[in-house]
Length: 229
Figure 1 (cartoon, rainbow, N blue to C red):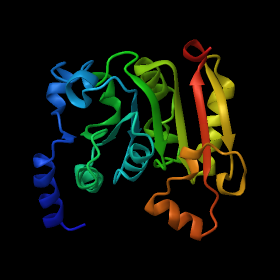
Figure 2 (cartoon, rainbow, N blue to C red):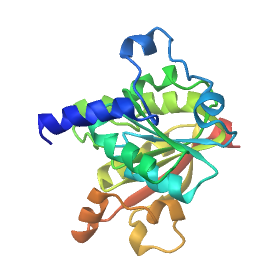
Figure 3 (spheres, rainbow, N blue to C red):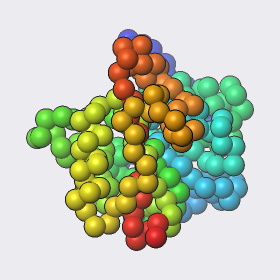
Figure 4 (cartoon, rainbow, N blue to C red):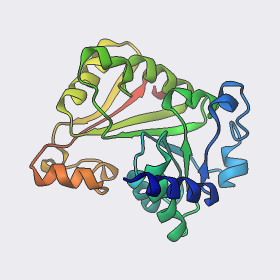
């Protein structure tokens, strides 16, 4: 994407009422005005909140919102020029249960209060395969501890990825901890029966590319034992 297009999208994001772009300073100083007020001031309903972390163009956030009008969806990514498309499409389709937040994932504790979120989706994240990059994987134990704090009772997390490495890594984490419980796991969702509909009925641009290459798409759903049982 050229710099001119990026600048254009950054400017348009400023005009979208479904895009929220807090400064890092405001977040670190506890000045985010919608924390604990998402339902009353942003969505103006009592429906559950679902996050997509590292949402990219917002395709999955948008797809889930269309399928689940009784839930609220928030796509989070640091790259606003990417989720510009999702934000614009949501406005064009008149979707009121969608918004996007530009921030780093490690700062979501400054955006949501404890138990404010019902589900978290992580779709096709960078697997960060090198061991020295483990701290950047969105499903490492440090991030999982963050997610635990904002998830409500019975809340769960979904990972959908083309990376068999990342799928196996997460399964290993779940098996090696005393506080995570596996709900569902599948190594090739499009060659299996009885797969959760939200995992197969939405396909991103890159996911379609992977499928053309006959690359398996994997999916895991898990919860916290303290929250879910």
